[in-house]
Image (cartoon, rainbow, N blue to C red; front, side, top):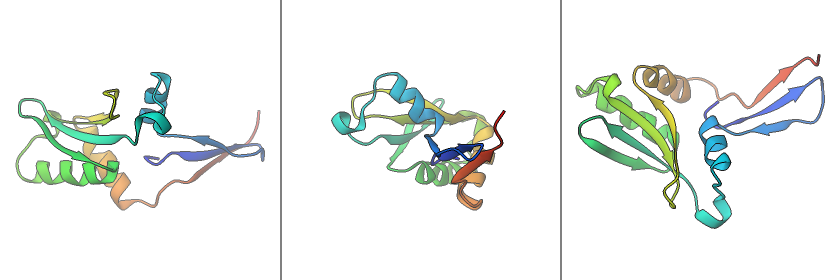
Length: 117
């Protein structure tokens, strides 16, 4: 669900649900048309920023490589940031590993359907 998904309840028209970090940025006032595209930052707890990436999947790949080269998952975080300086957390710590594998290896979830009340 790192790309967002369409939610369909009881056969109604689909409603687009963006990833939670994009919802958080929009709630904070982010507007892509005036501020530009967001990017993703991988940060280490003591080393600081390790890299900036255009997509969340690139950030996940980089973080997994960092873990393979000896950094502990608990020491890493991925944030979504805007050119104007707004930021929202994507994932940090151990959940990063599972989320990264899910985003990189699993079939993307595009639509979620549910029966109505």
